[in-house]
Image 1: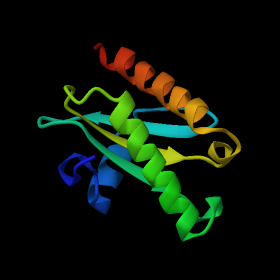
Image 2 (image 1 turned 180 degrees about the vertical axis):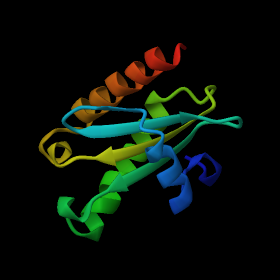
Image 3 (image 1 turned 45 degrees about the vertical axis):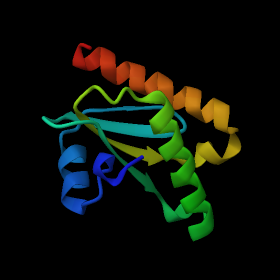
Length: 111
């Protein structure tokens, strides 16, 4: 995922989260907000999930899931917060979980 398609600044994270439009399940919390440009995604992994190596591995996996699952045609910002239950499942199950949340957001936005 290119850097232009990432939410990186703290102000952007807080702006998206304060919109209070979200969907959640055991593995993820997905905040979303429409924008004018293109799809952007930010990933947040708590220190409770493990040390830096584990958190970076989770971020790489979630980044790949976003690349495979999300439709890059829609102009929307997403913040993905990874929950502790993520560690107990395999990649395919977590990907399916993220896909179901993404489908919910598309329905809520009327797409």
